[in-house]
Image (cartoon, rainbow, N blue to C red; front, side, top):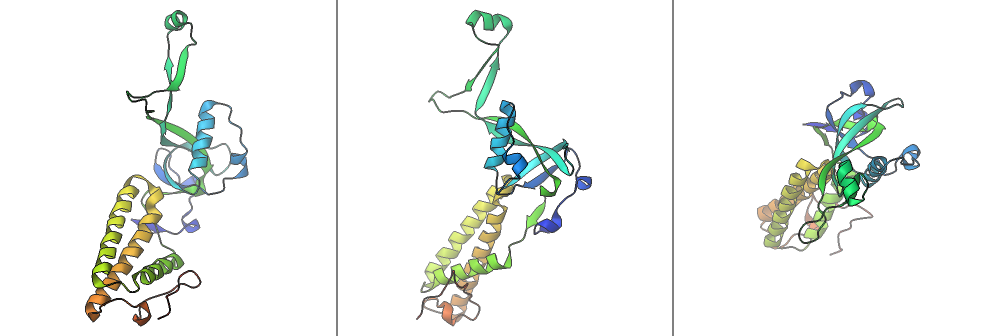
Amino acid sequence: MKTGTGEEAAMRTRDVVVGETYIANIPQRLPARIRDEHAGTAAQWQAGMQLHLARGRRITVTVTGFGEEPDTVVVVRDVPVGRVTLRLTAEQAAALDLAEGITGIVTDADGNAIAFPGTVAHTIPARRLRPQDERLELHPDTGHFHRALACRNADGMTPAEIDQAAAKALEQLHHVRGLALEDPTFDRSVLTAEADHREWQRIAERVRAARLASYDPRADPDAVEHPPLIRFRQA
């Protein structure tokens, strides 16, 4: 699995293969041309809304072509659709005194709305695309913060309590790894969960090796704190 940290891995249109699947990084603040674009059709409105909902996320897309503007690509992605259209024949429409199609929400026997598979198309800069097998790297400051948070939370814990916390961290890691298999939005969560679990494991091993009754980060040479966000309580 490849690793990447951001702009150094940015793709250009010449690197993009039509028909291939990529990960698209959607910025928190969309470009003005996208924010101010007026939808002319229901499909365009839905695509714009879905792109708005994807801000700050990593989504899986398939490239279908290149945009009219330079260095842009047209991509499609799967999204659930809550509204459907039932097409009627001319005879059915005339008999029911309805238009050629009925648009609405389908519900189950309990009245709950049912979602159906659907797709939306977006035009985005090619630089937002990343290889599907790219793996993010945890920023050193973020890793430092999560280590410090574990050290602070472990302060005063008994070995049994630390083992329990380490087991809970492992459970969370397994959970987000499973989510990331289907949704690249959770890639960053996997990295932070890995950092949490590693630190709890380290603390647990130190307590066992030193046969301590409880953990004291101030007496741990490998413990870290992250001022001004994380501080150890004064003994």
